[in-house]
Image 1: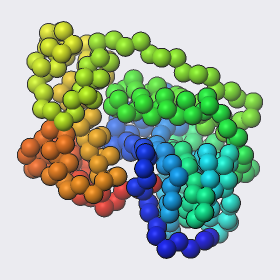
Image 2: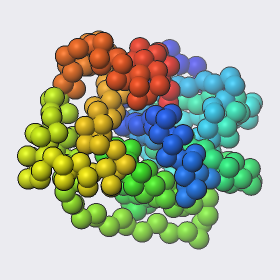
Image 3: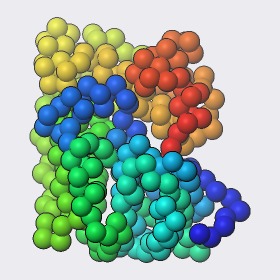
Image 4: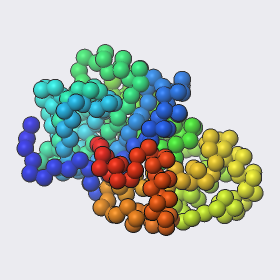
Length: 294
């Protein structure tokens, strides 16, 4: 492995990442018989990730898929070194000690997933080669964007199932040469989707149920009924989930202080903000920032 003078776990221009909360994984993935055999825990995109470096002496609790779209990188799994170039992918099995880093001259642009489940274990175990050439596909990138955009809209049951079923197709495109990924069709917006759009566009505000309902021309009671039926949660709870999802982006990719982040998502009380974050993510904002990964 090449030595680096400056090493970064993350912090790259135009990067994207979502880490799904543990309580969501427990309720919506592990207990969901549709997807519990193979499901995403984390997803991200790091463009031209100069000085990107990770070392896990005891491996990860999940399997890791890294797809190199541009540039180069280096991966070592339990002492075996792999040179990664554009078009290559590698799957790092869970609990296997590993190191990976971007090339110093041509740093890689990567799409990556952490994934888990009993089916994932079987899939990874049957691989003869954990590194292979996957080539380039606009359809593959569109599918990644579809997965990411659905999770970015929040962790409703529908979004979680949809994203994970797409991931089944995504990973199959790497492992099985005879599989072809088709373009995702645009989902026709409805009132719930319109409400989510309104929430995302006003993440920095404090909104009441009445204000949200007024924005989409529905009564508060009717909006609550259709929203909970589709997402499994109330509009305000969902709004808070979106706020905390935005918070994780600030914690992962900026040096803003925690009280500054709270202001950016429309919460003036830092104590309430910390309690809300802990209730949704299972750890405090400081712990999340200190223990962020990939």
